[in-house]
Length: 145
Length: 125
Image (cartoon, rainbow over all chains, first blue to last red; front, side):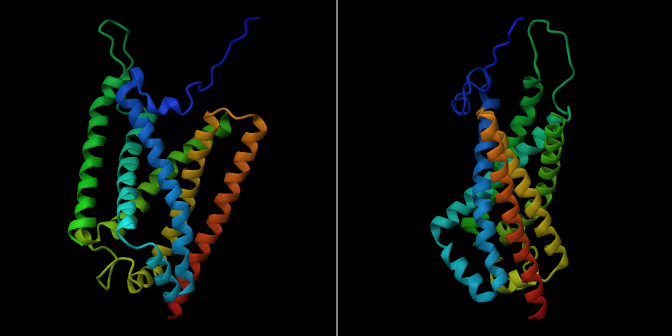
């Protein structure tokens, strides 16, 4: 009996860094994961830090003082940008998962077209909207305050 | 496989909920100069008076707990998928799942307790 040799994720994390023939879409995939992991790391710490509000005003102000200053402001801004990208790209991925924006199945006639071509306008939209949110966020974080 | 499909569907559903609730949270906390939402005393959103005002609202109590649960599930399930893609041995997969479940449940209890306690304390104050 023919045995199928599997190569489960043989590139591992290296596959995140090298887009290869998948190009921009692979980099967005990697960025979605990196921002997701960053947001998760922040969120787990955030739960513990903000839980101090249960102990009253003194405890709250003490913990907020511990996480204030320019380095934390920049860190928080990076969290905001990561959220903006992860959320907007997540909408695109959820819609693609449900079959929206991937085009209709067509016969493979040269010049070949794939779902990547149908997705490209959405990819550009994600980058533009996330960039706009990052810009507005930068104004709110560093200019208007 | 069916169980994984269900979990993946919940992962996406949790993502939609997070989009709404975390979007609101981000708008309150980080677009305050532009929008000024739910900061009744002005100043910074993390000033105690603003925090206390939000904490005593039933809407914020419910939304914090919902967001906490959805974000913990979405984040930890996403992390589990990434780790599983690295193809660990079956016993290690089981251990990873259990560790992530325990972390998620532990933080959910801590976060919910904090939301409930601050709801009660600020009501009394």
